[in-house]
Each structure stands twice: as structure tokens, then as C-alpha cells.
Image (cartoon, rainbow, N blue to C red; front, side, top):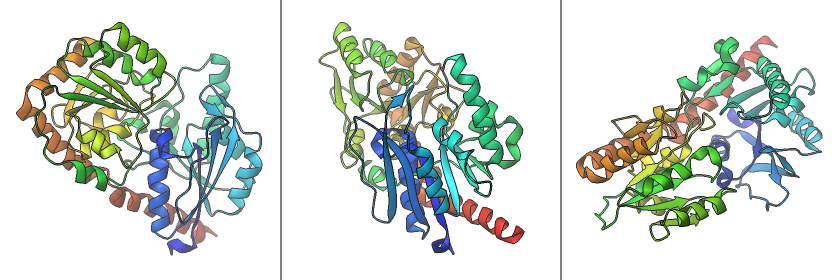
Length: 373
């Protein structure tokens, strides 16, 4: 029975507002707890950031840590991970998280784990990349199962020799607030293009701003991050001050309404660091068509070209402008894409469906282990 299964979930951060991986972790932890699993979470938090609360039914620990090259480095992580392993029947790591991967390899030999690989680590110096790749290889070789969110992600280089252990389980979320907010939209004098996500370089928000110069539309930037000051300066330089609004972090309770106020979501990501695009799912559930980019990851599978939106090449302002212009000017096409987007989000990305698949995987792995014992 699930209530006899103790799961330890490990990620670099906790808190849905910290990013897409954390949104996935938040949804999975809550769903697994509701299904009767005993859920404990181990994560870090940046020194400068306040702690995030854990929901009822979930035990959690955040270790304050400096962040180096986007990854937390907590001095007490290994003892905390060893304690979690002793309290768990199975550990579930969300990657990339080099600190946790290295620490796991030092755990007692009977410790077993699975991993969800969200993306490969990119754009690191060579002296850092090679040791990190070796640690990841050894970590994944010891994993009982490896979960990815799409067939495209399953083909990444790190998994080439491990295909027999790869399971494609798309991410699931509680979409009810977004589905409820997606009532019919009224035409506006100026349509709204929304961006939702962290303001970091690979998201390509600067490309969206340069594109907006040629479009008769307002732009709502939903999210925050270290690139915000530079993006605000670029907005002023382009003369877009009256048409671009930076909302900063939007609380969960307000997010469905903010998306409902938009007409199109733009996800102009420029590198494979964008491997899924959680923002797409939330926007699609609200009835928004999506303009995304082709990155050889799962982004252009989440929202399909010509069906739930349009897909363009990354770092191509002209192509992005043409796609956005078509959706903004062709209202019947835009509304049809939005309706199909809602249907696709409901059918493929609900936590009810995907949570059941993940829970079944855990149960199967533990059943096989009990049989072997």
C-alpha cells in the first residue's frame, strides 16, 4: 500500500515560484502525499532568500547555501542526504543538481534512487563540464529508473546508453485554477502578449522586446530574475515604456487571472536549457495559444506548431514577429489554437493522470525489489 512507502524527494530548490523544476516538484510532492505516500523533501535555498513553506502532509528541509554558477553549494548537504536516505524506501532526485549527484555516490551501497532529468547542464567552463559529466554518468548508471518529460528529452546524450531504464512521463500540474480562468476573452484595443518565467538569459526575453517594436500589442512580463534591470533598460532604449509592463513575481492565486488578461503566450527561449516549458502548460490551460521555439527538446511537443500555436527558430526576431502577428491579426485562428491548447493541456498535463503514472512507477520498482529480496 502507498502509505507504507516512504519517498525522499531531492532538488536544488523548493518553492514553486523559483522555477519550472520547482513547479514540477511542488505538484508531484503534493499529489504523492495525497495518494498516501510518506513524502520528505530535501532542498537548498539561496542565502539571500527567505524560506518557502511546505504544504501540510509534506516534511521538508531547506539548507541555506551560496549559489555558484546557478547551483547551490550547501556544506551540510551530505549528512542531510544520508539522513533522508535512512528515512526513505526510495530517493527521487530532480536533475541537474551536481551537488546531490556527487553526494549520492557516497551514500551506502544499499541506497536506491530514481531520477527525473529535466535538462542537461549547458554553458559551463570545460574544467567544470568534464568532471560534472562523469559524476552524472556514474549517478545515472546507479539509478533504478530515469524519468523524462518527452521523447525528445529521452534522446539526450546522457541517456544514450541507458535507454532500457528511461520512462517518458510528461509533467503534470493542478490545472483547475487555469481551466476555470479560461472563459471567453473580449477583444481589446491593444492585444496582450504575455511572457511567464524567470528573467534569465536563455529565456530570450530580449528577443521578445525587440520583436514588440514592430507589433501593435502590449507585452506583460510575468516573472522576475537577475536580468530584469537589463531588460528594463532595453525596454526604455526601444521606446516601449508605455507598452511593456514588468509585473515581477506573480503569486499563484493571481497567475490564472494574469494569463486570462493576455491573448498569446510567447516562450522565445534560445537554448536547450528550456527542455519543457511549464509556462506553456499553464497558459494553454487558460486558453492561450503559444509561440515557442524549436530547440530539439520537448518545448515544441508541449505546444504543437499549427495546432495549439506556432513554432519558430530561436534568436530570430523576424520569425517571432511574424508568428505573433499572425495570431494577433487572425482572431479565428487564434481562438481555435487556444481552444485546442486547453484540450491538450487537460488531456496530457493534469496531475491526476501523470501523478498516477509516477506513483505506479514507484510501486513497481519497490515491488520488484521486494520480490528480489
